Length: 242
Length: 235
Image (tube, rainbow over all chains, first blue to last red; front, side, top):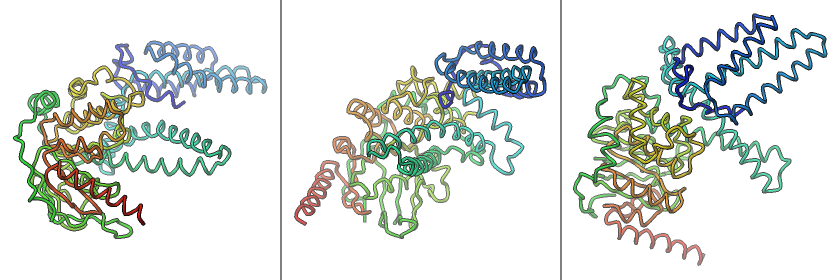
């Protein structure tokens, strides 16, 4: 399922052009409908519509098939269980619901950039601004999504390291380094956020900044294109540590 | 202009000094900091943008105290870490640079355009929509640098930015850092790179033991390290 993160590709499909709030509303509405409606024909119709919506976003084939394959497997197991219980209609309905919600969720993540999602979460969290700055809540969501593949990578590396030491079966040899490295990664990430001034914007957003500076003389473009402008000052061996 | 005024740092738990009281004025455009592992050079670098605060004394950037005006100082001072993976938060390059710009550009379209132009200038335009996990170490470091530069800092502090890179990327990132028309302070183990600065500080056991010409600084550092190695061999 981790492969489903970062599926977004910039395209010009209708769902890509739709605002994030509309897609989230659609996902919520469709999920409620799936849960409320138990008619198998409607359920199959909704499933087909959701699969078509997913296909319309032109998602990366391999990762999408792998992700959907997992969901279809779960749906198949559920169906088998319900059929075994003799509930054929419920079997169809449940499988349809699972596939519909997963396909629509995938369609939303394939067509919504993290930046859009961040804006959406930030706007959504605005009523809570007295408790926590909305920007911080948005960054928290982004960090959570960032941390999942990283934690998985750390776990895989810890398993390889344990195997290299002949400790394949030692749970401790895998979990302890994984936990400490995950904490280390979190600390590094925190420092990086701090260094980049991200999520200081709860108050910092009100500090006037030269917005125009992004373009023009102070822009990275101008900076990289020009040689250093200040005169080289000869090294002063007198100044310094005392 | 960066000013250290008797700035000292101690380990929070043990109280062991990490950086002895240090007084410095850093005004040159290219300054390198060299020293052994654990000597306190990264702590010195982190003091500059308020990632670490002094327990006594103060550090000022353009007259702003890092302890009192941390957010404003960090807008002036960009910080580049050794491992860019920890610095990249968003799934793709353009989104990560745009994240740095959220504070200054509220309109998403303008923000994305500015991020794209920052990536173009650094030579990563073709990788803008590629997952950060699919980039090479060198490309990630360039991306991290793009994220720093997009915020138009006046100072860049780079903490061993080339340590994890191969020779090709080391040369590329090093040259790029040297070409920036702003003050660059580089902590490094690469003595060739350190020697290209205008001024070099040698840190040892939490103290600045040499401050001056890069050529002499490298010699002081070599003598220090080789002297210690031979002491270790004789012990």
